[in-house]
Image 1: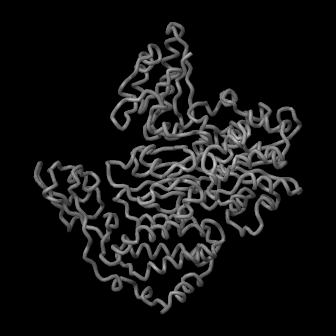
Image 2: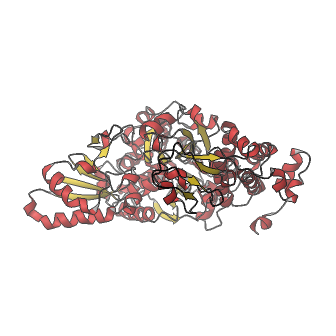
Image 3: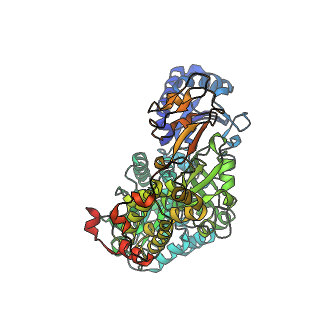
Length: 633
């Protein structure tokens, strides 16, 4: 029997994969028994290569097609499904321009090793039988025959560390919770993924929800819990829908509920939709939210494994962490530990986006270098432009320069160089990215997402944003760089939760690795990347211009003039420094220059010029005044 897998993850659905699936079903139904072959349609979760969707794979031939449209379906059935022939135009082209037949031959998929994503793109997430046929719930059945100590020993032997960002040893967390005898105990899945550009957890919850349910159930068996929650980001409608269906089907099949697999053990799981704030992904804020309170963090001198939900022992694990658990129990902790590095075992899922040629969801062994991820799996930088930096770990992550591309990606190495792996967000930047503006972007995001409970985070982020904005708009001073570093140190030492403690990472790493860009903004009133409008003017090099008119057609201000096949020019009086001309020019003829502006001190409001004489006094003034109500106003 032939099987047609159609990716129905969020990305492919946005590109019309649901209509493609419907067309397959309609045409195959119309052909009926006369077709002379049997074929079934399987709607799967995200394949990871979202920008090339909708993706269609025909089994057992292992033929994968990309950018499939409704109009292509009839030809696919007639040629590939019926006769096994290829539709060349729908195949993926590798770096040499050669067509590749299967995903295994695709340079995006070939370097990957899938454990957490092992079922996604292969099974129908709405069909529990499909999951069971792929080995699903074998891990839970095995765990039910093991003691709590034996389960935890396997997790410890695997070396699994939390994939939510902190990298805390999972086995140690479970063992600590087991040691407390006060009941009830709770298990919680953190699916409140809020990092810009990240979609790792969403893809797992949408495409393989039973693996998370099974992982959470195994955790519950290990610590003696009978109640658990899956806390899912409120915007993830498809994930919520698929997880709720998975819970219902798992209970009907006896894998959760009042009598798990006939053993008499109990476990009830339910979905809680996220509170809508980035900070709700922080462990203690998440638990406050589940309890129906405002999602604000608390001090962690008492850990959640001792007093979490309703002051009872609680184990909180990330989606990806839990997706690994059934594999570990089924195959053994030692087998899992063979993958990765000495201190970072297994694989890691990354959402690789930005200026890289092949964006998408990738899973590779721990210890894979940044260079390998970006230039092999990702295919290098779009348009052949120079690589500049990669930002890892979400909005609180650091920016890594080209000189460190050979760093292995693991928990400890990235932290050593000022970045972090975080939950797995990875944003690639080329030479047209301004690192000062990048730092400002992330601080602006975090400023809006801070809960405002503690002064260092609330006021420190606000002051950082003000300073970075001044630098980007030509009002910066060299002493601002020292102030940014001092503010960062204060926030790291004094903030209540990880949001505030890690928030300075984008600033500190850009100051460390790209300080020359800050200096160019301040001393030369120039943005080297040509991003900051207040510091950038554009001109067209007449020797490089070919008169193709693309820049004039793209200019929203009508500032570009010139005849076809003749050099064009930009009217600086009309130019709004949007950069659209540079983006559309195929001949790299658009140049950037700094602007002649007033001295930075002259542009500052008077009250900002009245700085205390010492840096310590300035920091005290910035962080010491104002209350929570003032901030809210």
